Amino acid sequence: MKCRVCREPAVIDVRRHNANFCVEHFLEQCRRQVQKAIDAFDMVQPGERVLVAVSGGKDSLALWDLLVELGHRPDGLYIGLGIGDYSDVSGRHARAFAGAKGLTLHEVDLREDHGFDVPTAAAVTRRVPCSACGLSKRHLFDRAARQGGYDVVMTGHNLDDEAAVLFGNVLRWQTEYLARQLPVLAGGNGFPRKAKPLVRLSERETAAYCVLRGIDYLVDECPMAAGNRHLGYKEALNRVEEASPGTKHDFYFGFLERAAALFREGSGDQGQGLQPCSRCGAPSPAELCAFCRLEERVAGAEPVVLRARGATGRRAAR
Ligand code: AMP
Ligand code: FES
Ligand code: ZN
Ligand code: ZN
Image (cartoon, rainbow, N blue to C red; front, side):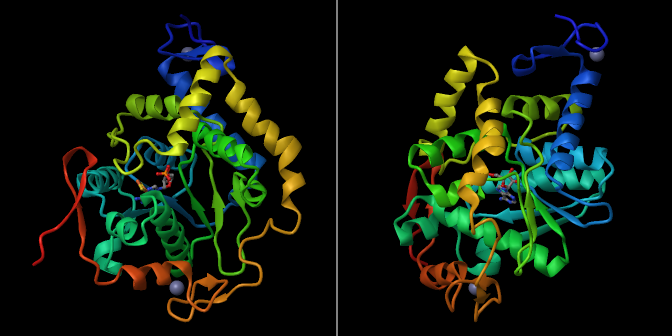
């Protein structure tokens, strides 16, 4: 197996591109793919301030590193979701990376700053944990960007993530979601721009990138997400990809090129027709935003603690 660029021994094959790469040229290929996504979708302009949402996993740490390598000076944002050891360890990885690189990491802790955590919110609302988790993350990314004067929030969603979400949205023809499933969402109306610069890299490539760059990331997946639909879609697409490499890329980029615009009419902008939340000031369709409603609903609930192997239980009353 030889590197496509220099013919030296290769360390990784990327079947989608029908190519093998040595360490140096694989890292270069990752930088090139990210630059290509940034340019193709106008993700960031020179001089703009970038906030990277960092979970301590492979994708967001690879993204932070790649942006620095490409000459940006992005700050990080870590959100403590209160998901037991998983959150403790993920925070440590994010902090260690920031410390080693001399980068700024902002932190928000759901429990300390807002009085609840994801397991407790899930129990109180009786909905899947990912629902309160996603709502909280989106709200806190937006808020941190507004308060810190950042132009764009970048997340580590990769090709596998986007293809799986697209698959789920298509299976149920969720046209509103399809209209917004873009690698970049314009800012405005109180929202920062949102961008996903890793859409041209697969999960396997971001993991390899971290290993080859010596980036120590949290390997475990979120225990609360185990068995959810999204993971099932990922597995299904992996089987298709295995049999015909490049399918995920064609599915996702074919959607962007040929179908996304069909769904977009009138719903491409974030936050049209919203008013400031009376409690936190975030743009909201109702007097109280969804995050503040959740915060009020969960306030005072007995915290749920996660036991080993993802089992949940209530903490003894204090
Ligand atoms: P997920 O929704 O867990 O697949 O994560 C998608 C992206 O959201 C990650 O690549 C990060 O950019 C961001 N993200 C996830 N969890 C956190 C967190 N706890 N703090 C900050 N950003 C996060
Ligand atoms: Fe959100 Fe697991 S990270 S529920
Ligand atoms: Zn090479
Ligand atoms: Zn609010």
